[in-house]
Image 1 (cartoon, helix red, strand yellow):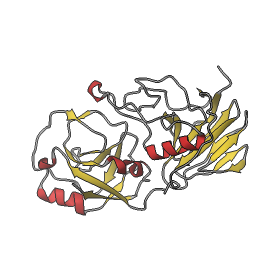
Image 2 (tube, one colour):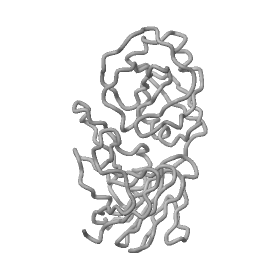
Image 3 (cartoon, helix red, strand yellow):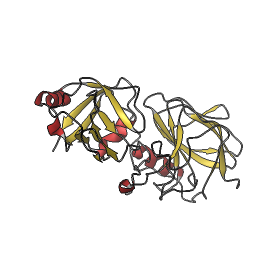
Image 4 (cartoon, one colour):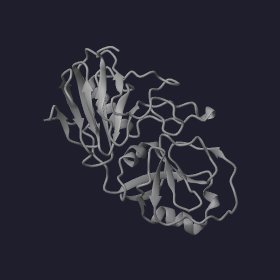
Length: 287
């Protein structure tokens, strides 16, 4: 393998390769996948001098440790976290030069859940259906990182990284999700629809890349029985038999047999991806 590569010293709880995903294949049963916080991905890629669609690493909760085989520009963003190079503190949220053989440590998220690590040239694992993203639901793309894995890097750009956006704001203390009525909101009682908009929920620890699971008031159905499976979109708020809403994220299934009460605006899903368990959640109906 070329020296333009990085070795995994510590994979962490869940570290995956992500880019902007593989939209357009729902008819084949393939989720969009991609970074759960795409704004953070775009920002670290700009810092590293990459195109916005270059593949990066998405860490979850406790970071990872990596050893580049070549000198490389690295940028860490998304959830704020400590960054160290060979044990010495390094900057978060800006470009850092890491020497060949040095150990880059991405620490545990101080706020939020997911940090993003971009390398100059991007991670160049083989694309599947036009994307290098790991999809946990379908298994497409590279496997989640394991200790000892080696990831190839592309040729670094001669263009210096620049940023034309404010710093990442961090996760909100309360997650406000704007929603439009779903295709099956008529499957719920009027009281359930009021509760959905007026009552508070909390993020469940059972949340993952597939969906943001919520704890709170159960939504009572007005229509009993089963629903034939139908298409699901990013941001769909599906209500399983226990009545607790689930907001579908990037690795969501493309079909489902539970009614969708609402659909969250895609612009709000980056914040949802960074919401830690216990974060209060409110739904706001918009046109």
